[in-house]
Image 1 (cartoon, rainbow, N blue to C red):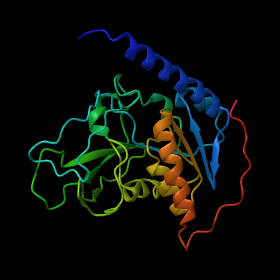
Image 2 (cartoon, rainbow, N blue to C red; image 1 turned 180 degrees about the horizontal axis):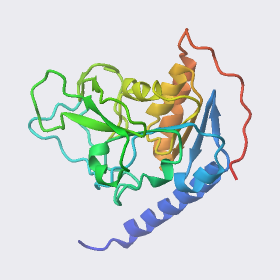
Image 3 (cartoon, rainbow, N blue to C red; image 1 turned 90 degrees about the vertical axis):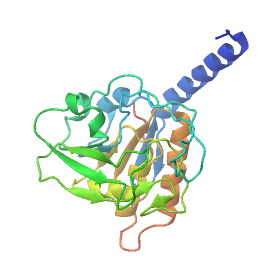
Length: 253
């Protein structure tokens, strides 16, 4: 591959700008209803967070995921693929820093099961439903810290074939259904933390359920997307959920 000095320079400049922005936003969280959102490295933020009761997250799997062109069997709803890499997905996921909390739910557990502690429980998300197998996985494993009976969640999520959110765009390469994160949140209590917020699905679920939420996302692009999605969730509240009290903004560090 030929070295392109101009492209390399631009990439370094963009990375530097992103890093400066992350440092600023880490100390100046965005407050939306009962959601407190940080743009930065979750490992840097963890020691300084207010009280957290549960972690519900879809972490980087450590598989170097790269979205490719549609195959002949693909049923992608948008046909496009994501060129932006998932930050942290090029190294093995370490669950240890997040096991300090009372309740923990990790999606995508099949990718890092060998690094999870003994005990806990696996649940199965059946995302194929009654459709024929294609080139996508038929499901995902969800790991919970508490040892409970295995459950199967049937929720179709295959491109244009979805049980829910049929008209909503897919804005993140590993985006999960709101209903799936609601299923996890229902099995926890108190304030929910998503240290790998991505496009903000866990925060949207918390907003709809009237739960306090702390979200952290290292990628400024996805942080902006998450903020917009959570903002819209508060603009369209559940009629049966009491609206949050007006919050004040506090610096993290």
